[in-house]
Image (tube, one colour):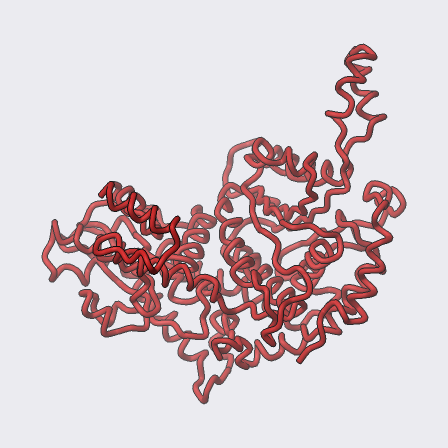
Length: 546
């Protein structure tokens, strides 16, 4: 059993070190060191990370790196890449990295060569996507497919949707992508109102083909389709990403149109597998392979780079510093790229489902805060919504700014203005605006002394708000792959330091079990003894309204 994190020498040293920052100023730290940007930035796998606008100095990094080496970050990293079953509670390997391994790589799991299996599925995905994109695959009346509807939930929804939207400029011009996840019928209804049965392909993504929300939507989509076509047409319009061949066939999907994946693929890490079929259909298999290659480049960087030069490690350690030693409770994700609008939501699942844990790998209560709340939106929208809180609120919230140096559009002037806003916000959060500066500005505007005295406290910005900035040359399949993998490995490192299992999600299950019970009571006889008075009252009101 590992000793409590807070008892380790490195952790205690960091606690003591953090006391030195109670009155430290980022503005002053930049003024004192002209090379700060160079010292506190890293580059790798096509991404650049500037973490200089954090309350850190060289000694901070040395102590954080000591913490990483004192905890089993490097040992667990080696175990993950080797295929050891580091997901202890489910007794599974964690091998999303194998999904982007090159064809000539070799990795055995339980005596089976899995890289060959991965590429066999990728080859099937390639053949299928080529048929759809070329128009060789036709619907029941001979028309080309124009709309793809991905039906899934969790990682089977968030990953494909986020990636397709991020890479929309690489999409096939004929194909429109739609994503349905919510069991709320309004979600599916809104999608079906936009598509035609004869030209729509449904991709049903469910590992065991029994996820309640996904299958409710899938069966409703099937019923809608059969109002316009015979059951014999189902194989032309429904495919599955699943492992349950019997259930898939019973639904009416041809066996050759089922694309499998494996139990060592966690839902929030599954976009690299057949779950990414919608992305392959949208950008083509060449683009999908480039997406995998970008992630593989980050995998190799994470595996091989020294900890002090390792982007995922450093991003994780800065997060540990802010969370555990400076007391921040949330992180805002601010992509300055409209096509990354779903990236904050994607990271919410990746980070909060992975590291939102309160017991260690040994089953003991954690003794340090774990995952912060992850939230955000695209800039510049966030600037006109919640950035007020970031600048002048009572809580300090670190921000990850993400931007591409080159746009994927030809509209003149827009991108320079976008980047100016991104860089200005990180500078403003760091610098703030003190009383003398505010007073000087108001005097220049001709305000009276009384007006200045009244407005002064409202216009002061405390600054000292930490942020990272992640840059890529342009948003492409390769750089998106690297960006996702960067955060995947950041999550891994933080979980290793906190000594939690980042790869299970038991907290998701309780609500599912209770929902099944309540669903039957909403349509049949209630069982008041099974619930509290609030739940019984809500059930009664719902039944009365039906």
